[in-house]
Image 1 (cartoon, rainbow, N blue to C red):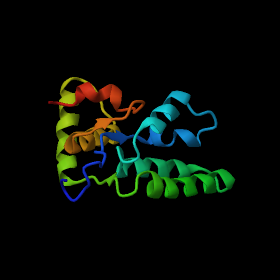
Image 2: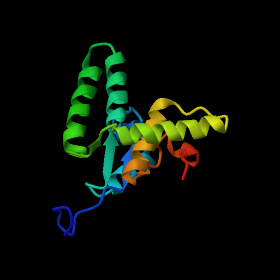
Image 3: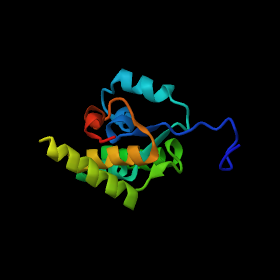
Length: 145
């Protein structure tokens, strides 16, 4: 036993991006993404606070109505039921890692959008991998060792 967790506890391995955890809400969800999410042990994924903000922004941009209400309820339930306490904050360590990651990318002549850079930094600081289908996954090479 370590850190007060039973030996059988699953270690968080993936940082799940907004487009991955929101896939079930799409009119025609990608079956491969749904299969990947369903195949993960319950406690093996975490989400960044940035992803919550991205999801909330998308919901807030919708006109008031049934879809917006349904998505708002989904976001509240997903955070409580799917991720529980595994919502990772943007800490000073994440911010410093983000600065290094985006500087390295800029030196290479590439532009990494702030949400993607913060997700990469969050994953790096916590020793996590980005989930397949994450927009930042294609930019992993930009992350300095």
